[in-house]
Image (tube, rainbow, N blue to C red; front, top):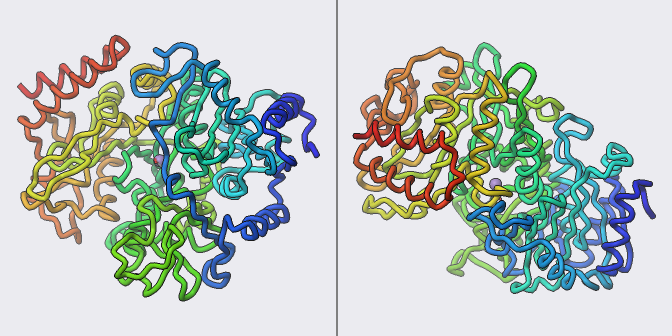
Length: 587
Ligand code: OXD
Ligand code: MN
């Protein structure tokens, strides 16, 4: 039965149903009663395993098909009319050709299945930031994840009223055929279609598909920004909370930074941290000339392996109730979960992510390296009191980062907004760094948006430059590198909570509370301005972390020149100018 009179929605659903031919259509109203029934159904059908109710109340384990365990960048498309608009970093197909292909796959795909209608909101329903979507899916797993990750249910339909302003999403698991897996965004039609996958990053469409690929297009049109960024509030002993956004490529500790616990000395002095978001930020200029950010999500879809009481107790705490685990190991001794890095001692017996008996002697991983938890934000011990603020939080600093063994210093500040855009555009991580200290292979990942920018990357840089003209009290832009190594290939900086020492300096810079040294890259701290008390790092070591090797940077600049050239004529002139300044500074 329809639960809305909105014809734009009901006509579209009828059209999809005529194609996919589900046995029945169920509207997700968001009620606990309905969700409870769906959980029961998922357990009965074998799609989810109920975990120990005492230790992990309302938690479930799901195993995906072994070939369906991660996002599939090579099967992810941006389908706009002109190929040039998708740019060189996206896969593209002409929209009508792609619709034809997908229609073939959708035809009859839901026969014998239920089609769920999930009305969901990215952002607080009714807030100035909110954008609405409807995902049609034949997967109960998708429904149960989407209600954690977004604000979903009939309130969204009420907020939409008769409007046609929503993102249309269709998902079918199909047959999970690897050769016919497609994750497709049609930015000109505000439409997303994912087929033949049931893995979160591909099919929880609110996340990467909507909140980044489609939303980056909306933001460009409407004058705001959709970014792959965490949002963190830092409260100083005076009780003042200042906010930063941070973009990092994967495997740089983004979730750890988003839920950072201050070092003991800081905690004693009254420092606190508040998580607003761990993955996505939507930013808009406010009337006060600052950029204001919201996290459009309502949960965390975090990587499980490596999450422990030591690395990220807050994230672990998030998973203790109402969480769906995907592809982790089942600890059969007490019907709980385990993954590599959770505890030093693995369980003596487990069922691995493939559903097979496992012991520590098996010689294989018990959990898939990309196994996940889908946890409600309400569980986060450091959830910001501003999490649901409809106007978001004002951002003082934007922090870019990457994993570089030798090149990038621990921290540097850009000279101004446009130079900061340059710093974001050249972001990179080294994929491998050999133990002998050799620098690994560099993969550029501008603003950590490489797989998520829904249009031409150089147009996206231009949008950043243009946004700089829309606000007169912009965040300052910084770059950090927690991963400098010594000659033995060991990390020098302790990282984790100690990163707050660097964040403190960053925030002081934003409020003109500390000085800095000018260098070829921008500004770096005076050694004495970073609080090292209790860090185990002395000023000499800090000096080595801040050292800029001109020879390496000359090579870096040459590599950037080549990289920019690959984007053709669209690269903004301001970025070329920043590159020239860097080259001159290094002479
Ligand atoms: C994620 C990602 O899952 O960036 O958040 O891949
Ligand atoms: Mn991400």
